[in-house]
Length: 212
Image 1 (cartoon, rainbow, N blue to C red):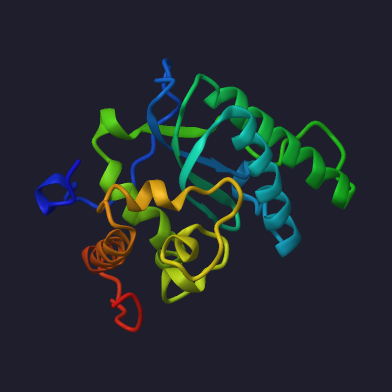
Image 2 (cartoon, rainbow, N blue to C red):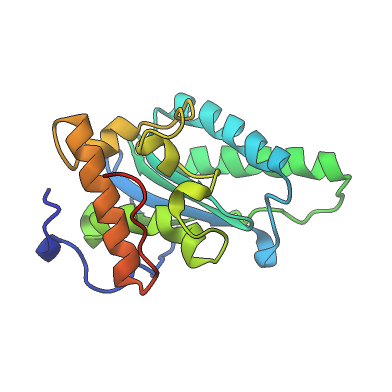
């Protein structure tokens, strides 16, 4: 892989596709799941935290290598490296357990689901979006107007990747940084510049007060 500009898609990363019919059991995937009818699935910090606890359990059971993640109010992103077949079953378990927990917490009854059963996924190697998704996911809260810098959003993997926080049990930031350089310190610096360049490409204001 290369982080040269000619290896990075020039258009903004905005396209999502339905789950693939055949999942590469050792492939790289960008996975997204959204609340039904656009409703908030993380209305409180407790919901964010409970979802992370469930994700840690599912990732360990399915042996997912989570390179990056980001929770938004009504959806979430995962950048995964699979080690065995289990993407669909893992997402069903994650969304199902979280929906049941949330429904019990607020006393929600009926047959409706909080989270859409059909998650969205992109095979990053086949679609050629590997590099762009590494920019898109940390910048998602910034593009949504929730924060001005990716490190200001507490519900993503960016802070841990750049050394500002401890990673969640399921998160493997070293796997992401290794894609940019063998030496971790060099990889982190390159990653920070890479994410910032994505902001410039998207027409967002750059920042310059960290990562030098």
